[in-house]
Length: 93
Image 1: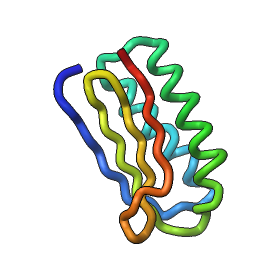
Image 2 (image 1 turned 180 degrees about the vertical axis):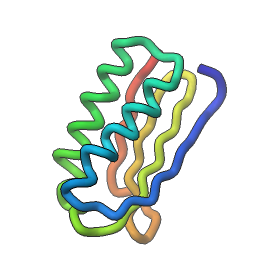
Image 3 (image 1 turned 90 degrees about the vertical axis):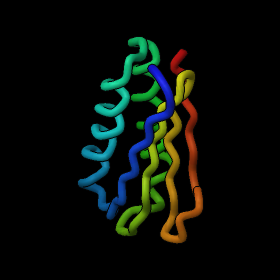
């Protein structure tokens, strides 16, 4: 993996959308050149983030920023004021 790659998703959260959002994060991670162990870790961390932290965001709007760096994938949840409210950093090296 070379350089930093970032995607930004604006999300209107409802319960039915979370599986789609989780899949989007996993698809992004799998498109990167990382190990199977790193992909499994991304899937686990994403699931925990959505189940534990994003449940409070149901029926509201937020943004999700996913960045891939040479050694980590970062998932940052930004509230309506564009301030970070939750973050996960997943090692991929």
